[in-house]
Length: 430
Image (cartoon, rainbow, N blue to C red):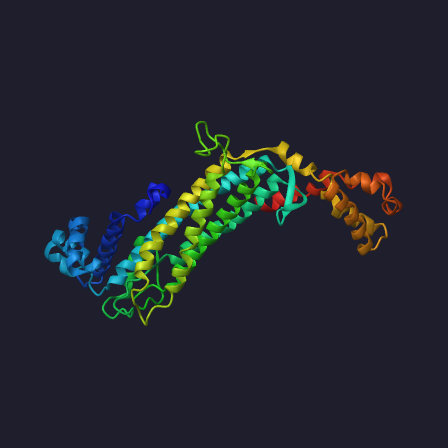
């Protein structure tokens, strides 16, 4: 985790202290269940809660000798608990601790990501409502197409992030399972009721069949959900980057007092935040293929997934947490230029109304093929040489034969293109 892109609350989830605290809770809750079943003395379970502690440096020291992290932890725990420690980890295997802990951490992480997404959604809704009726040019292939509104643009992103939030909620459910099932998941040495108890205490559900590990299709789905949200971050960031280009300048990132855009050119105002978001999205997506490859483990378990998850778990969640919060700030402070939107709308002399003219000619009896040719011929004159599309059409005898002057003029009403903005907003925002 790079401090530059790490927020403290998310980083804390992946700190050793949090991991070992969860390990201790798993073992202690398991002892409680074992005590209730009469497998171990209740006094032993009470001792684990009362005396149970850990020392990270000591665990590291023991692991250097044992080469086994869970054994190192249990050894250190026993140093605090004393003789009753012999009842700890009864019938359990390392993966019971490791996988259940990872589930807790991933749930903690996705809860933060859902909160982050809510900030983005709130910002998008506020700005979408603000610019619902602010007309701008829509583009396909990067080329002027037909008018839309800036609010409709943002409403589309709001709908997308709403879907992303739902995917995160689903990912939370997918990954939030507990395994306390023993060496190959058969419960041979531990009662299934122990797993049920631990799961309930940790806010998880029992994994139906855990072999020795929780199946990694769950984790693959989790990281895929994060990647889709990251791609939505990039799509919005890319839109802002395009709108900030000098030739467009319909919107731009807030440029704070004292900020510098270039070490060489004092005039520069670069879209550095959204460019950064594009890069962070790539990092989050890079977790998907390794997570998918983790699904195919040998037989009941191997540890080829372990090193992968130690990396992608913290990295993907930390980077997406940072990205979503940065994106929320970008949208909240986004500087919008309606006057430049109008200039760009007028730039092609009315060509943005070409489809409406085409449709009107067909309604007036002209074949679609002929109507298309007529409209395109006049449009290309404006495209190549400039001028006024309406005026050219008004001087075209084929057009004037089919359409009266007032009917032709009505085809250039900008409000025609935005008349259903309210319908779209009702669908998105209710």
